[in-house]
Amino acid sequence: MSEAVNQDERNEYVDFWNEVLVPKFVRWRHILVDGLTHHSERVFPKLPVRPGDHVVDVGCGFGDTAIELARRVGPEGSVLGIDCCEGFLAFGREDARKAKIDNVTFIEADVQSYPFEPEFDFCFSRFGTQFFENPVAALRNMRTSLKPGGVMTMIVWRDIEDNPWLGLPKAIIKDFLPPPGEDARTCGPGPFSMADSTVVTKQLEVAGYGDISFERIDAPLLVGRNPDEAVDFQLALGPAGEVYREAGEIAEQRHDEIAAALKQELARHETEEGIVLGSSSWMVSARNPG
Image (cartoon, rainbow, N blue to C red; front, top):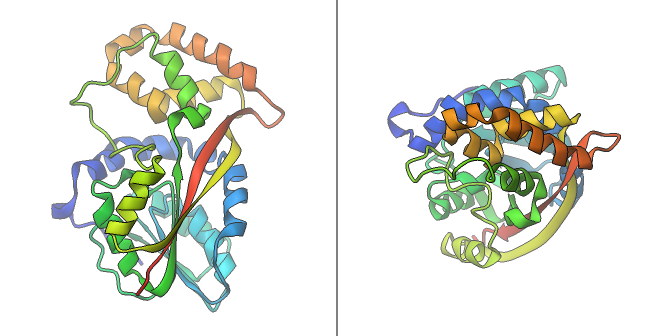
């Protein structure tokens, strides 16, 4: 089943994801999915998901979390994965087919305006809600997907200072390139837009949630199988990638010295697994009071 985003309802952030980021995310899928393994291992055992539950996975990306949730709820349950990028969802459908998991459905839609019915026991999002143009409206719409008493859990990054996997490369590249201008195209508010627990608590309260809680999750994160791959990954995505992309010709002219500086620092973090840096997120849970 596929439901396309209405082209008239697209916003600039959705367009940016589809036009600019999807090809880069696809290229680095093995890092973006496998690199989060340790982080996910700390999160999934804590999720209040039971066999037979009906679950919606918001901003499901490549579908790996939706497929894992489908395994958790079993054949009596179901999972609906929603993302605004069809280029991601095709991978989810194929992975589900290969794994012979038939209780998960993926649709292309904008969660901020999707016409939910209150039919789900649990609503989940891993690193998706940070990019909503209007977080309160999106969170409120996610709440409408829940039955009375249903739980929403979202995983969001803490501050960049708590996430050296993103902060360290940005600090290095800023020594060579100017910051992005105010007219830079962007994917939305950004990965750290929900780092402030006080702000997010207020957003959730305004969106109608109760029983709001935050739990800090710290975990190592793989950013490349070797220093060269880690450098290429950082120059393609994340805060360092944004600085590099927006610098244009200046970045191209200084590429070799930028890459050398990044490689020198990232090589210090090489392990048997690859280049591993620290990461930190909030696991935020809230309930639909009904």
